[in-house]
Length: 114
Image 1 (cartoon, one colour):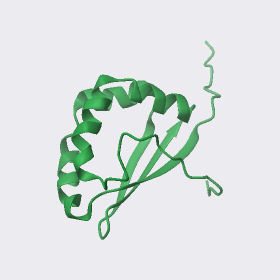
Image 2 (image 1 turned 60 degrees about the vertical axis):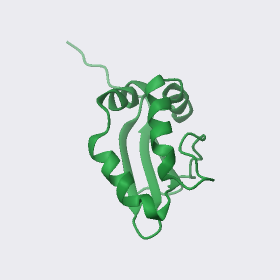
Image 3 (image 1 turned 180 degrees about the vertical axis):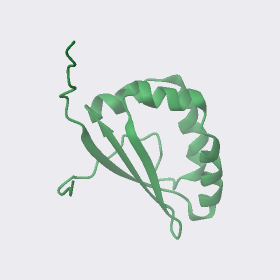
């Protein structure tokens, strides 16, 4: 029996979001119980090893995810009903100019220490 290895390269992707500083604790509370259908949709759309980090002082959110195809991953997620509902729910926590449903601006990955 032979086992084929998965040779698709995973891209490391990072992005920034900005919360309203007065809503940081509410935003954290909302993430204590992420909807199961949202988690399933993320996995189905190809989000792997997804993490969010927060600088509490000013509400800066740093997102990290790995994907074979980051553009397809975000497009697939944006096409789901659950994502539209989640983004409407999350919108109240973000700065007006930092809408969570706006296309993600990926940061340039320039160094990695394996």
